[in-house]
Length: 588
Ligand code: ADP
Image 1: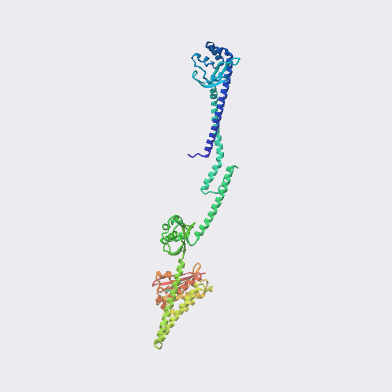
Image 2: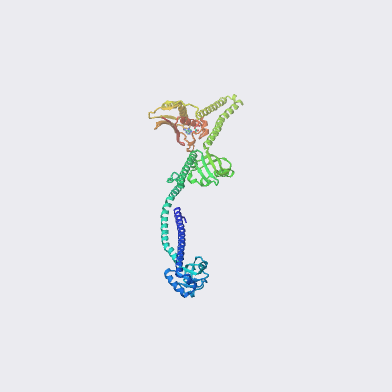
């Protein structure tokens, strides 16, 4: 059973008051009893003395019952007490309540023994004659010479004493009940006052358990409670300060971890997820709330990742590995897994995932570029070497073929030169080595001039080219040589990959914040699958045809780099066998 402090205090007060009252009552009653008995004794002694005057010793000594008994009856009327006259030998000579002859010898009664020895004998005992508890007082009946002639005994029932106690008791009871009621009322008030600070402290502590440490306990007293309230206020303040500091630290760490571009996963020894950051959420298309406390494999279905974690937890050693994922987006990660240690015990592990997709891509592009360059350079070189060997082996004297062979060698050498020029140009553009000479440029003029340079080639290829520019065009900031090169590359392709009697249409139009130039041809077009990669280096749909036409596979890549250096965009729309439209924009 739960008893609160107030009730305990009230019960204590009640117990205390009851104890004090009962012991006081006991002492008072005892004292009262004793005093009344003494008083009664004195009264009986006085009465006995008076009786000794009334029934003198000489009469007693005669031991004449017939004479003594009537005197005893008279004396009883006066004394209002039981009177017994006893001879020296203990024989009852007279008794106010009984017939002396019928009474046994009283020599052995304690009060009689004392009286016969000359003292005042007192005894309290039950009287079988009167059927009551009696107080007996006996005095010796002495002659003037001091001789003891018998005993005068006076007795009164003790009820007189008890009556006193009985009379006082109701008052005492009333006193006790009033005191107890007052104790309950005052006890309740004082307990309420005493326990008020305790209740306040309790309420505040409950609030603190719920996380509210900012409250203050009112200090209303200067006693121990006041001091406790002050100490608790200080404690609350310190705890709040510490919690705030920990929260700030935690926020900082959370902010750092969540803003990291690397993915971070922290797990406990059971491989349960403790934390993941935004990057992981994005990479694996999950949410931190869903992953919390789940097994890693359950939350992120990736066996390799789970194996790295298990290995780290098992070995307690840092691990490194590469991981490729295909869904939701194809990516490659470098994974660093470190065990979390607490006093040399592995208590978990942290996985940091570094996205190296771009790095890997660049590495592949570089490898591909080197192999492409070597391959592209090898082809004309092999041909040149072959024809020179043929010439040296005697074909030099072969008047029918030697010139033809030499012109083939020249053709390949030109191709080699063009290839090297294109590679150099591209590498300069990529390394941002080239400084573009931006100047206000009239695109209509540049297009016109460039198309003019293609006249012989257009005639030879039986392709027509028209320029369609309606709007008056504003000037753009551009490097004229580079834009000319873009146009050359695009018009050259439009002629090369055109059909006989095909046509080319060049348009330039004003857009909200740029100028858009389109080169549309009626040529062979491109398969849709090749469109996304067409601006890559060395990417060619038909390698043999491109080479035959003197292409290097770098033209469009150069176009893209130049336009991007002008902060513009390039694009293509094409339908196979129907023609293509290459376009680029230049910001105004
Ligand atoms: P190339 O030196 O081979 O012309 P480019 O980078 O200029 O190199 O072009 C890459 C490839 O794009 C070409 O080999 C060709 O397959 C395709 N291509 C370019 N322009 C056109 C076009 N106007 N019509 C059809 N295909 C084209």
